[in-house]
Image (cartoon, rainbow over all chains, first blue to last red; front, side, top):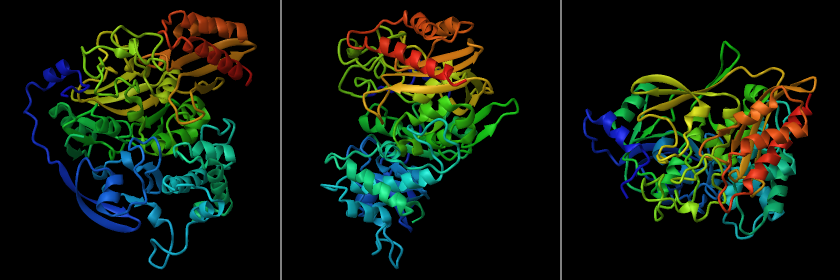
Length: 207
Length: 328
């Protein structure tokens, strides 16, 4: 399949006088700071952050569900904001700080420790899962939700009269809307909403 | 996915020069649509020019009272920005009606405007598609087209433009700022996306190598209200069946100013000039709102499976305008 979506004729005209395309390197060296540890990797440009985590760093907490940004199972935090790691090319995230489910708990070494994150505690307490496949993505997404609400990010269900800039109150409707990028085939949604509400009450955004 | 080269641009000039020198290269912003299309084989660029770290991530006040939004402002930051929420609520609401929290944190303003259609034939390389592969035909006309265009489409393509943000920008008279090999230029957002005609492979009027650097909003009308409303199959995280962005200013019961744009109906955000003509000067009543919607939608030519979009667009319009009129 050779076709692209460029206007081919205009393209050819505009570039007729220029050099033929160069051969491009297909790999680059890059650094990802994952859960506080810098990793230097040489990766094919096609490698997503999700594949770098799972296949190159052995961190299999983030899951490959749809691989198209629709299910949220791959959700991680990039520089503190949640993102679908399946749609992030690792080479473009060079130098970024990435937090995965493995990095949420705290211990003496600062990672993979004994003290669970309030959201992990809340998911356990509320039994907010059945098979657990979507859970790492749900929890990382919820961590992002708490931070976004504290930072005054509105959502689709926020009333237009709400003051801009002020922290957002995470009602159950707000939690449902903000978590809509994370699917759960087991249908644990009611408990997930309760668990995120518990973490909100515990001040989860500051942890 | 095919192997590709990667170049991180250090300046707009460097990016544009690379774009001009490397035919078929693509600019990478957030990548939420482009990377997905590369996985699907729809896009096969030999080179990605990463513009994600260019200093285009600011929202700035303009001397005339307008707002300049850098092309790399993330969708979530755009929707949360106080000047956007306070003065252009339709824009904030449109951005928040699209995608998911994760995607909005990654997707950029410029990239949002350049989203490709979600027509299933376009996204499936085993199927013909005039947009993806000119001349191969359009199976959507006879096939699955429930989500596709009812107005402004052609025999070659019935795709819809997917961005909610673009619909609000069309109603707000925003301008797209471009930087290309031949220099800089500005295009009104209402003229940025094309109708398909016999060249459906071209979504926009973007020239080869051109890069979106900013979106500029004119000053908001102090006495007007604006909002965005979207009808979709799910309550959240779904593309529009129909959406409406509206700006309305009413004084003493009469409409002083109206701007209206539809999403989900066409190959571009559909600015409803015929409806606006009916609205301005008329009393702000349900009857006026219905007549305005009808004036615009009389040009609709729905396909067998998407005729429902026409009354849906009418009802959304009447509802949105009635709500805006009631705010004074």
